[in-house]
Structure formats: C-alpha cells, structure tokens
Image 1 (tube, rainbow, N blue to C red):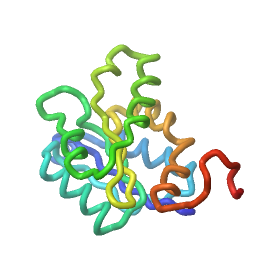
Image 2 (image 1 turned 90 degrees about the vertical axis):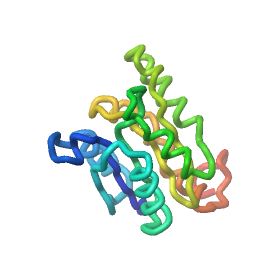
Image 3 (image 1 turned 90 degrees about the horizontal axis):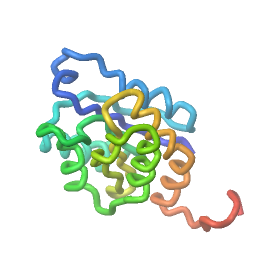
Length: 167
C-alpha cells in the first residue's frame, strides 16, 4: 500500500515567507520510512477557516490517505488548529493524541498543554502535530508503527487486528 500524504504547516510568519518551515520538512523526512508519498504540502496562516478549507480539500477533493499538520496546537490566542480539525473530522481518535502527549510528558511538562487532535474525515486520517521540529520527531515517532494499519482499517480492510499480517 502506498500512502498518499498531505502536509499542512500552520504558521503566520511562514505563510508570509518570514520563517522557513522546518517542522513540515521534518514530517516529510520521517514519512519516507513508510510506503508513503507527499502529494500536497503548504504553509498556511493560523486562521480557522483557512485550515478547515485545506483539510476538507485534502480529504474530499485530493482524497489523500493522511494529512499531517504541524503548528497551532498550543494555547496562544492564534493556536486554532485543534478547533479547525474538530470542526471537519467525523470521528476522533483520542488514543493517538493521548499517546503523543504521554510520550512527550516524559521529556517536558509543557506537553500537558498540547491540544493536538487526531481523527478521520471520510477515508482520510488527520493528525495534528506540534510546531517544533524536535516535537514533530518525538510525536510522530510514537504514531509511526500504527499508521499503515490505521489507514488500512479506515479504508475498510477486513483483516482482524489481533491476527498476524496477511492472516
């Protein structure tokens, strides 16, 4: 299975060309270890309506298997990625968000203020990641072992979860 991926970086400065997007590039490097291909990559401002429109486009129009966002998951007034994500997903996957926070808490107490959301829209997995390259590495590493299986299940794979692959 070749996973089609979209990367969205939420950054006001990045969208204006005032900051280089290192976090989105980190995602791009990490997903190369999967059978995955980046089909869309954009840096957009921290605006709820813009984020929602892009998530809908990537899921409904581009029909990507997975959208990985970076940035906007904290508690500043401009951090609206979780709200935009919740507004467009049909089902939430709290276990993924909890796993990221639990692993991050081993490294920093600031992880408890992450509001990252993971969920499904149609047949697209949407994952909010933090905005720093280091936090992207730490959080995405926790999810990597489950991504292929999760996407297979979203797509309707009849394979039983408890059985070995191919059974």
